[in-house]
Image 1 (cartoon, rainbow, N blue to C red):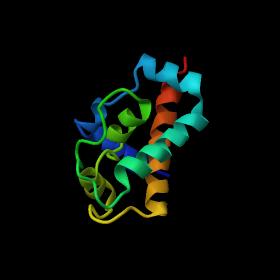
Image 2: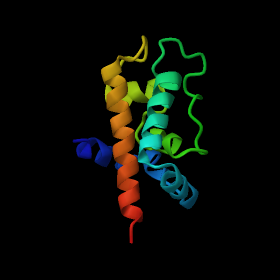
Image 3: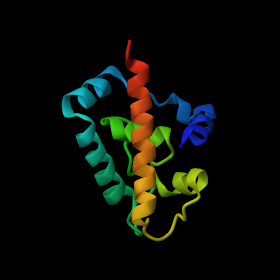
Length: 119
């Protein structure tokens, strides 16, 4: 479903730098994909979706959690990037459907990374 978009993101010199590291794979294996999915939902709802984001552009760390890495790789890291890459307004709260789209894209990217890791 997202293959065309993910291919465009892979062509971006900035977005293509983001890859899961061994510690991220270990974390995902330890926690399980259901927990990672819940983290993605929570991060989007709390850090991206609200209408008023005083720290927009700085709310998503570049490391520390696999979802953070995925957010940068998929341009779901701040409202400016989301507007540029996904066409959602940078003002106003994100709808539940928009949040679900971002979460699904993040999880698709993580699943692809996990598949690439397999021997």
